[in-house]
Each structure stands twice: as C-alpha cells, then as structure tokens.
Image 1 (tube, rainbow, N blue to C red):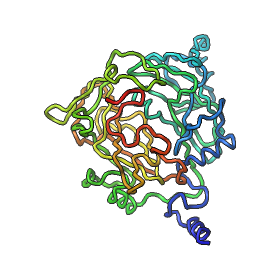
Image 2: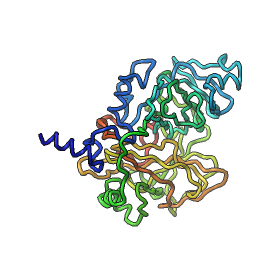
Image 3: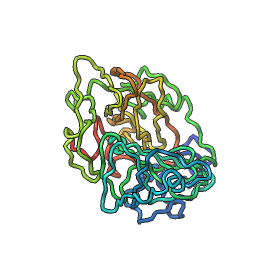
Image 4: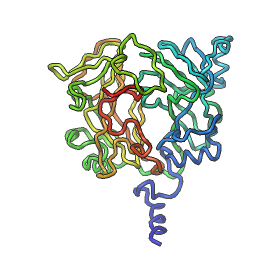
Length: 399
C-alpha cells in the first residue's frame, strides 16, 4: 500500500526523483527506455546487439562494412540522401570504398563517410543527438553523425526514419578500424510529454553546497548560474601523475589499432610537466590532453553536456566528446562527487594562447533525465574513465 501511495504522489509531484515519477516525462531517455526502443524496432540493428552497447543514457553506434573516402565534409540538405549527395560530389565514389570487415586504415588528414549498423524510426516526440565516445575524442578523431536530408551534424529531428552515417576525420594519428568499431554514440530526448520540473535555483544551490556535482572545496567562490557549472584547467598536476600536467600529440607516430590496449604512450605523446609557473602556451593546431582542476560528478537523475565552444574563453576548443552520463564521478557510498576529473581535449586556433592554472575553460550544462537509468556509469558496467585523473585513451598503458 505504501508503494502505491508513493507512486500516486510521484505522478503529481515532478520535484520527486525521476525514478519515482509516473508518466512520460521530457528529457534524456535512460537505458531502460533505449532497450524498449530496441524491442519495438524504433532502433534497428543489422547485426545482433553487443552485450555492452546500451549505456546509461545512450547507445553506442557501430561501423558498417565499408568506408567511403570523401574529398570534403558535407551535409546532404533538404530532400537529399547521403549517398545521393556523395554521388553528386563524385559519381565514382563507390568505386573506391574500403572494406572494413577484416580491418582497414583510415589515414589522418582525410575524411571518410561510413554507414552505421544502426538505423532509427523515431516517434514524433523523440529527437536524437550524437557525440563521439570518450576514447574517440582523446585520440583526436573528429566524428560527426549525418542523417539523410540533414542540415546540421549530430542532430536527428523528431520523427526521423532512416539510415545513419558517420563522418570520420582522424586528426593526429592514422587509425585502424573494422566492422563493429564504435566511435560515437546516440542519445534520445523526449521533446513533448509531461514537462519535467526545471532545476530550480535552490535545488542547484543545494547540489553545489552538498558537493553532489563538484568537490565543494574546489568550488567555494564560483558563480552559481542555475544548471551551469563552469570548470577550470589544472596546470599544477594532481600528484598521482608526478609533475605531469598534460600530453601533446606527436606529429609523426605509428598508426593506432583501436582494438589494442597496450600501446606505449611515449610513442605517441609528449608528456608536459610543471615548470616554474602553472601555465602553458598552446601552439596553434597542436592537440593536447589536459584535465579539470575540479572533481566533477553527475548524480543519477541528471545528465550533463559541455556547452559549445565559446570565444569568450579564448581561441581554443576544449572538447570533442561532450556528454557526461548519469553516475559519472558519482560516489554512491557518500552521495557526493568522488575523484573523477574531467579530461579536456584541447586544440588552439590560429594563434598561440596562454592558459593559466585555474582559468575557466568551459561549462557543463545539467538537465534532468526523463527517468533514472537502470544502468549507471561506473564500476557496475566497467566504465573506462570512472575515478580518472589525467588519463589517455584506453588504447594506451598507464605510465
């Protein structure tokens, strides 16, 4: 009886946790809803689903059998399918397709378009958004989702029915991929339905004061714009990594097989160490791995996304993979932020730029999930970057 009463109260009180609310609420769809979409063929797969393909608030997308070299990045535009646009750009494009079934090299500096194994048939109230997986961003591989008739990358309109494609452009290293390799992921947002209660100023203040989204000792004097968390760069080092504060990609390195997990990082990266002052001059068009000064967390009822590049922060880009799953950095034992730093994928633009320790380099925007996910980022699903400090992609051994 108590459970029934709790559920009745939850249906009329959106301030209660998403896991106890009834109805179809707006917001990011959790793992159990994604599984329902798979069961109802709203998400269709060419091959059987991988056991770990569904994440807390997204589904990993897998490369198909062939990659098509493209002379340029493009969007198909209204009324145009992806393959029709490629044929318009080069009528012989299909003659040069690359077979991925036994593995193949994607050369740095080139652009490829690859059909994905997953297709979608969305309901009219559900839209989709894509982002690179964390390891993809840390390898400086630019990936963007393309749908038929798309006028923007990484976004799929509500009600879309059709195939999905990925544009892949390795920037720092040539990479070996094969059929089934996962480079990006798709998340879904219900755009219509019962309106989820927006994060209030008092709720946001409570999350900050209790250290639920960021280690409060690092964050006492920060501005408190509701739902938006500024983060800063660490150029002193955490101690766990000695005096290493970051890594810079080497210009000339071997190709990286994305299936391997044992590469020596010093063959591909130059460690950057603290020297005299906590600052770093970014060289134009060099690629860096740095980390946030703050320990960041995403409580189970929320998801977080890095806001797009903003020139007010400086002439550099601070991320490729910008989505943080529910449970990232969350320590369930104390219901607070644990020790997970945010890893920053940084590239300067056009001119050298001086970064200093504690400088604001980006913002995280938090939003409610439509429901609390059954899966949570962390040890339970063997997440690669839970509890991380300064950490390279999973293809490299730890120094």
